[in-house]
Amino acid sequence: MDIQGMIFDMDGTLLDSMGMWRTIFPDYFSRYVSPEQAEAHMAEAETMNMDTSLALFVKTYSVPATVQELKRGLIARAKEGYAAQKLLPGAKDFLDQVASAHIPMAIASCTELELLDYALDCFGLTGYFDAVFSASMGYPSKSSPDIYLAAAEALGTDPGVTLVAEDALVAAASAKGAGFETLGLHWPSSRFSPQDMGEVCDVVLTCGWPGVTFDALRSLS
Figure 1 (cartoon, rainbow, N blue to C red):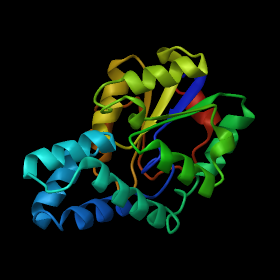
Figure 2: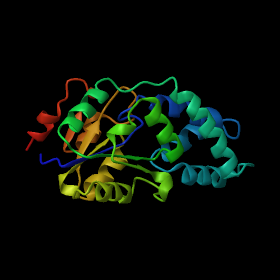
Figure 3: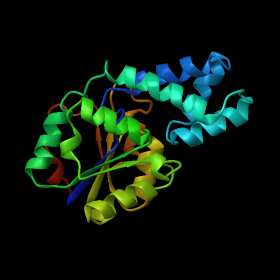
Figure 4: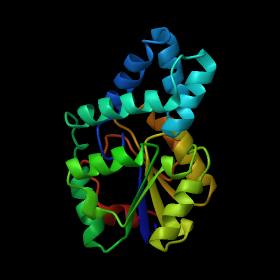
């Protein structure tokens, strides 16, 4: 595998934080709708940016609050939640290997830019990345590959030599469809099975990052 650049999702790929989001969203939304409706919206909106997700929520359920009001509350809850999260085991070691190989790296995440910057700083990851892209920067959903294409352009690498690491099936399929090499990451908090990810990804890590080496990935044909 000719890897000249890497693009990482953050929540569920570098941080073990998807459980946090799957608690915050339904809990927060349950003040307006039933727990079942809150869960259904969370599943539908997982690869959307926050504004798009909240606009859909307000419209679908006639919520008596504005998108900005809901957003302020969610961001405050998320900042509290990130403080209690951890890096996925082996993630920092893998980032160190990629950095040592002088491979440029970027973040491409559905998380709000304010929260991305906050989380990356909290976990000491800011210095690893040459560029950080949030869906809040004009990319409504990862069902379109535009956010990955922008990240690759920032890194100066073509999609065919850029590896995208993702834990979401729709996002991985989007990147793959745009010509990127794709790595699917499975962890106990993952919504998708290794078999599902294997349908769209070039390589799947079934137990997260522990024991994974950058050299081994590069040696794959």
